[in-house]
Length: 305
Image 1 (spheres, rainbow, N blue to C red):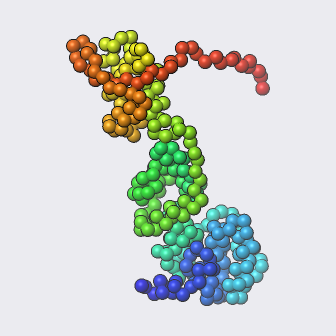
Image 2 (image 1 turned 90 degrees about the horizontal axis):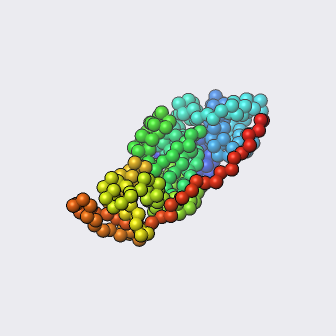
Image 3 (image 1 turned 180 degrees about the vertical axis):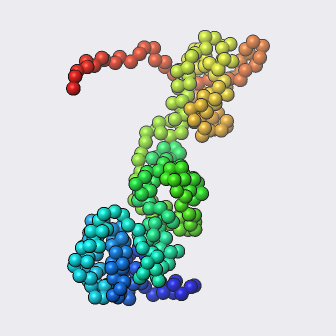
């Protein structure tokens, strides 16, 4: 254990809760003249993260309790006005906090440098409960759409950030990353979806479109032209033609075995047809009702605004 870790163990974490260890250490021993302005500024950066509604009042309390002697009221107001202008980062390389820096620990703190996320400020995580789920992570002022593995694996998250944010955050220890993600889970926003949002629901929607929206085969022989053919309540097609249709529509979640099982779940059945002297393997599903007329859309009288 290095000296700075030994010092951190002696500091109360009740002050500057979940914040930078340097500020906890300085609050424990007190800020002396020469370091008060910069010290209170950094405390203000922390308090804005900790309590956005009451940070100004808390800053005045910290000034009275931890500055020796306290700064004049006018100086405190100047710091408050400065912090009001925009979101500031900690002045880690400037005194007095630079002498007590423990970046390794600070990165794990909720209100530490980068909010415990290594290099970026994460504020909220939303889960769209589809199958598979889609995640939305608020990074600063940007909302990023992520797949599960892009949230789980740092290198994949890096690539996403490079494309969406034009930045590449550093890779931190997996334990640090996991703690940051688990912290987001405490206030996770979950958006439920209907059955159509599941993979099974999405697949059936594509299957129905494949069977009804395409040019239909006029007879069995036209199955080899990639057309579905409907007879006596069953729509027949070649499995490869359905796979190609799904791929074109970017539905690539099922391998062949899973696709066959999904068809069976929808009362699908396999068969063999003899077409022009060739044996053709086909699948059939209960025929979907086809729309036989256009939607009745009323005309809207245009009127000048």
